[in-house]
Length: 270
Image (cartoon, rainbow, N blue to C red; front, side, top):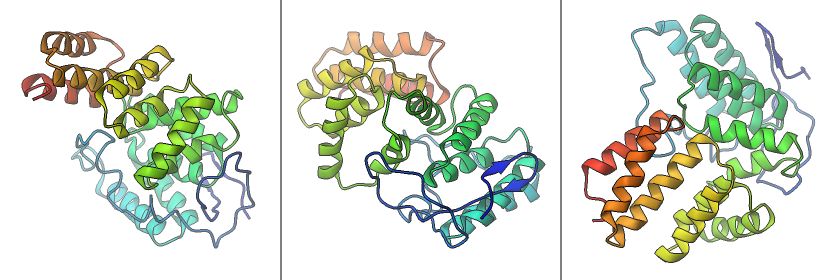
């Protein structure tokens, strides 16, 4: 067993990822662990951000070797070898220190294997490299920090990350429980709103999320979805004002900016 640290060299661990358990405890890690098939079994899961906007994985500025090592790391994760995956991600990171993708996948790997401290460290690295957002890094980082401050139960960050892959009915029930128990956790209100059919209930959930203390990415998506609901209600001017205000807000992430602009250029609520 190896301590889960990376300080210029790889010191990685692995564990079998089970379904989320409230108050899930930290388990011993071994070489025989596997990734959750629902997340890392999907090789391209992170090639598209949470809102459907493409983020280029390949770039002329990134060495080919770094790209190859990163892809090999994702293959290793898909094949149930997170120790090797972390090793390869870290090698890619050292070759391309300004590329947020390898540390992002390192953070996800640590989170799914119950190393919250290391997950926080690498999500913070991603946030520093991509201050306007990179996939779900801002939300994950904020959630982990809330958990470590004791605002959320031990193991909550991992459980919430895995919640996305539950069947809709179960996800709806679990989000209802989370919002009742932790009404100040804005990402749960955002996710709940997306599952509700009634626009009145959806708008109420979005307002509850905005009244909490959302991270920047969650804040932007709450505003965008509120604008869409208002547009469907025929309140087009108000919806457009919300989106324009978001675009002028320093908190607007790159992903939210892209979606807000596309929404404005389309037919809001049509």
